[in-house]
Image 1: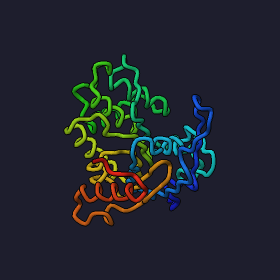
Image 2: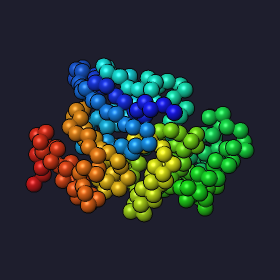
Image 3: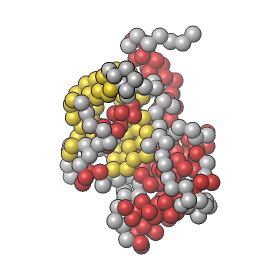
Image 4: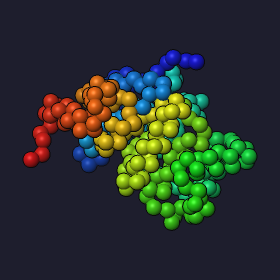
Length: 254
């Protein structure tokens, strides 16, 4: 078994061009991240910090301006590695005329699974995300929470080594967030590496091993949760997060 980090970025930098001002601006500036295999890592930051850009670079959906990303020891975007990843974007799009069951079966077919295995995996995943009762309803009738559940299921259809989640709790109610945390904990127990962006600190505090704080494209801090809070209280993480931002010159709201 390889002991290479699951995810590693080295001096990761990304510049984009403003179509309105015709000027280049730096979205990420020399970001270094190392996530070990089996670790759950939460990337925190205010809106516009560069969290989603970081995730897209890791997935090979964007190319860096400078620096590099390696996933499971290979450059980001390597085809053989992509087959070992699962990804849930913040606002996933599904074919609304399909049922949840049909959606998972279709995605399984994209991974080359035969009909028997697709049926077996689909049944197991629908049970995991508690969608059996609505599995045969067209997804255009699904709520935000139901779509998120199918989204989580499709990330796991190929039994990925690493799961990337962009704001997985976004738009969910209290019960949905609790259930999502439980699913993440099951994924952790299976030994999967999990990398996700979020601004919901209680959820991050409950499932992550380590967090990074990104601000205006720069990494302010990377710290193990156990070194932030000895009590497990999410307020400790909140205070740590605010203190790091304040140290970076971000004024607190009155």
